[in-house]
Length: 594
Image 1 (cartoon, rainbow, N blue to C red):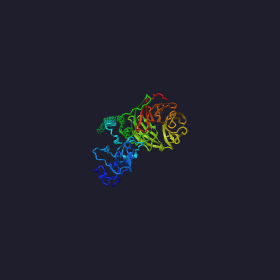
Image 2 (image 1 turned 180 degrees about the vertical axis):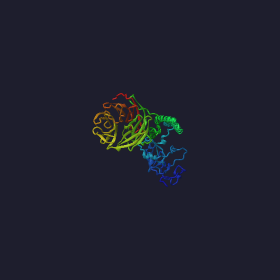
Image 3 (image 1 turned 30 degrees about the vertical axis):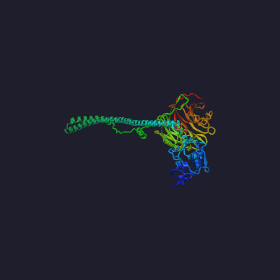
Image 4 (image 1 turned 60 degrees about the horizontal axis):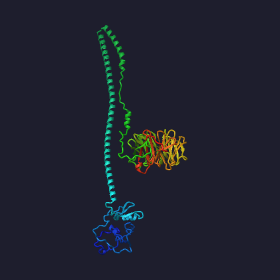
């Protein structure tokens, strides 16, 4: 198919058009002709001694390297096409042969310093303005590039990067080998554990078999004794009976009389011993399984847990002010099921080793094993969960604000499972449980409600004049605490809805209070993601002190009283920050800094 402006390659035998064909006598753009496109000339550059099309003419006047050239318009330009004489020396641009990725028919001969891109002439004309971009013609700027400082710096950077990636490959191989060795060891441990179980079962079997054999021996011994006694009695009775019959036949009256009296005596003796023989208790024996053991084996889903610990270099610890606290590490909570970076908005502890977290962005509730520092299980929900609370050691409740529901979740065999849901009338955010009662915060309108486990509303507190955005709540036997990021307050209420204390952070216009956690001495840890600190507030909300600072927008927090560890998440667009939970070791011996 013919394309306008295209032509086949032609060989010129002379430097002028005098020996060319009629087609060659036409005045056309010489730069475009070299790239295989023939376009009519629109002007002429006397410095370059080339005819230019309209596009090349415009570009020629814009480029730094050619804008001072003398150009003639279509009226003033030569009407004869001049061809350069044949030379063994290549043009400076002859080795530029890389086609443009946007315009494959064009060769990249320019470089934009502003955008740091290689360009063709079309790119320069259409996308790079002379007033903004600094575009260089490569042959004009490449003359001093040989053995230049730029050459040395870039080459050194390439070598450094090459070495880094070689080291990375080496590290990966070493970590993979270590991982494989650990898997082999784990398989050996599984086999050893199974052998221990078998040995224990064998021992239990030997015990019950021993009891059965002892019982069998006792039975045999008792039966033998009874049989012997019965045989002796029957033998005596038979002898007496035969003797009496014989004496009667021989009519020996005196002897018969005596024998009959002896037989009566024998019968009396037998009657006395008969009850002793009949008291022997003969039993039927059966084996009854250990139902607890059997049920345990049936309900257990696995022989054990194969835990995972990342083999990567530890990151630099977070700098914190208190010397009594130290950054112990971090836990990656992003999994292969996640489609977005994590947004951890709620946390609660089931045990010191099991941390349950809400990942709002990925619509997930995750079980984190704090000992192995890995996500052990993940439960997908229909929408993003916000806050979470522990009801019992095996039951949780989470708020799903944009579905206006509270989802109950059970924990069995270290697995998370959906249970029933409670439908509420507004968007529910904060949630906390105490002695079978749920405290839930709502927006639009703002309010607090106390519900039982069936969803029955026990009390409603109007928050119109108290709260604006009560995103988080927590409670204990005497108080309900509400964190409001807009009002910059932590409000303490009693269970009757009376405000009995307020901690106001309006001394800092940057404050934005978010997640909270009650410590074992009923003080509060509160995240302030705008000031990048975690503050500890007294139980009566009268005083407070910054205990951790220079954090990366801490969003929610969880305190473990047994291990004295503080877990917190960060709200950040940086995935490296958002996808990790931080672990802080605390001894609660802080210095008051307020």
